Image (tube, rainbow, N blue to C red):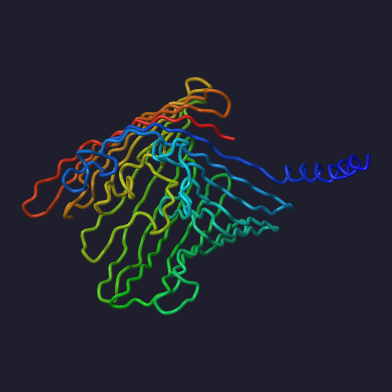
Length: 423
């Protein structure tokens, strides 16, 4: 009887504690399995310039289990943790029991969010490993250890810093200084218009010498969202500056790019949209064109692979539609896209962009190209979807290398299928 009373007493404490913990903890995430068949993605389809073009055909399966936990011990206080488990390609584990972590490494396991989120009144503070983006998350999209503070008044003020490098040691000695990024974002929004203006810069604490290089880019940008009748618009302008190099050989960062997106809901089932793209080119040897802030490209935004696999394929390179195939030639053009839901459980996607290069005096330059995407996503059962997408790029590249003819450019293709659950 005494033992029974002890057990009942323990349970009287444990069960309420478990119930309380359940109220404070929320879990979300996704589990996916994908099948890939691609051609010419890793070398951008350029024969004789980038390696392995003749053998650049890949057929494989991969998977990922992503889970996010949010613990809220009090009102306005949260701890956020996001982890990826078994993010791997099938058949690469080499063990009969499947993929396993290698001792001393974090193979098949990754933590990409771990931060404190505290709100008091109009002030929100986030500290830790987190996602920080500016504008539409293309020019600046950083997943890093950082501190950011947001003050919500009619003008929303967001400021912060990200620690990119401790220089190899916590001891800030000469040649071992920190590299930090700083940003500010000012936003205003009402029922008619939303406007954000933002600035980001990187500060390298090391001295630039004849043998030691530093990189200090900066970004100024503005984004607006508004409506004209039934049409919704998003427009963004980004301008890059700063420099990199040693004291004897400095290269200036440059790049001006703009995107305008228009969408119109024709009915409950059909949405039509269009993109206008502009990005300047560069042929100066002492300048380097960039389309994304260095060390701040988490990959949250791409335009060339619109559809259910948006941001997963990204076959045009880091510059995407703003600098196809990363030649520095820039691009100008536009495209159309559509989203159509013929029945409640099925959504169809279609998109195409045509782009021409802005600079043809480079040793290797993007001339013109077309990308096409066709996709479908079907809800098999609640919270479980099947998706498929076909991606095609036909883009030509020219060269001004003496005695060299224009390189052959093969089409880039990808056929991808996915089964995914969300929770």
